[in-house]
Each structure stands twice: as C-alpha cells, then as structure tokens.
Image (tube, rainbow, N blue to C red; front, side, top):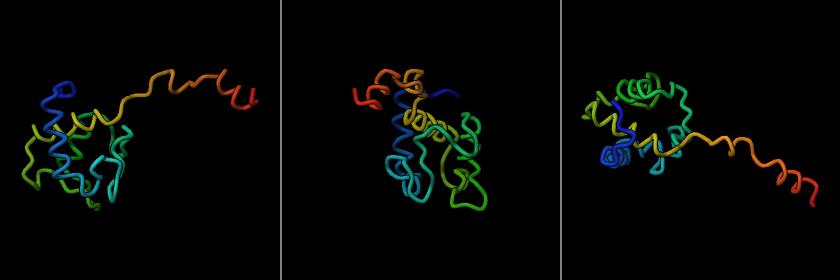
Length: 110
C-alpha cells in the first residue's frame, strides 16, 4: 500500500502518531524514550514493509508494543508510515557534497 502522496493519509498518520507514538518518540518524532524517527534510518529496516512489520508486531524485549495489541488497523499503520516518510527526505547530492569553494574560503579565511 502506498500512501506517501496521500495528504489525507499523512494527516491521519500524524494524528495517530501523536496519540499512540509521541509519548515515547516525542511529539515531533525526534525521540524521548524511543529513538528519533526523523532521520530515515531505522535499526529494524527502512522499507515500508519492514516498518509495517515493526509497528504491527512491536519489538520484543523493548518498550515498543505491537499495534496488533492495541486497536490500530493495518490502514492506520500505513497512514503512520506515510506520515513518518514526510519527516525526513533523502539528502540531495548537493547536500552531501557541500561546496568546496565555500569550504576553502572558510578554512583559509579569504
């Protein structure tokens, strides 16, 4: 299921995140007891299907409960994933390369 471009799903996902996830991951998803979810890098895998599995099943031995324990439906979990995808975007090539001339100017003070 691909909801990443569905504005209504993203809005629903944000609301669900704030109700069910923010107590551990923070209102802005930057982490509290749970990890920062805005980086786009997740230990349990970053594909949509891996995120779905982690959210539905939880992570044994941690404070991360599975959504199947609560009242979340698969569609609601997909909406949360759509919302999470809006929190971080892939870095552009320019972002990762930087600007060599500006770096040299800063370094040498010219």
